[in-house]
Amino acid sequence: MNKAIQLQQSILQDVAYLLDDNEAMKKLQKVLQRLKKEKAAKEEMSATEKEEILNDIRDGLRELKLAREGKIKLQTVEEFLHELQD
Image (cartoon, rainbow, N blue to C red; front, side, top):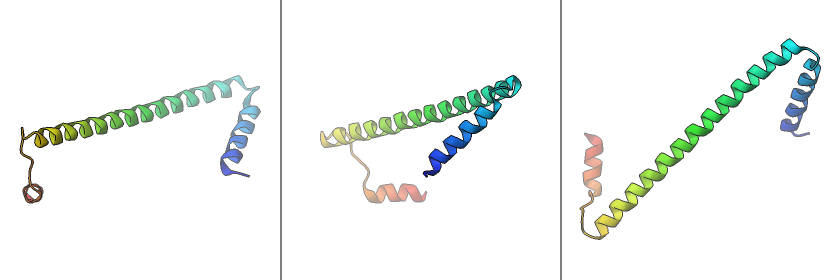
């Protein structure tokens, strides 16, 4: 059996065991809400990071377009490598 399915079944069995205990269910609910918030925060960070990457790509493409139009001059590889060494 798939490990993910086994884990899901185990969790469901544990929750079923606690169904008649209101205090345990309240604690479980709080833990689950905290986990949901953490997951949402991770996903939001991921979406923010994706947006930053897309913005960087857009900026690079704009620079490339300006360079092709002769409006700006790009660094040579040597200039770039020298800049990294400093």
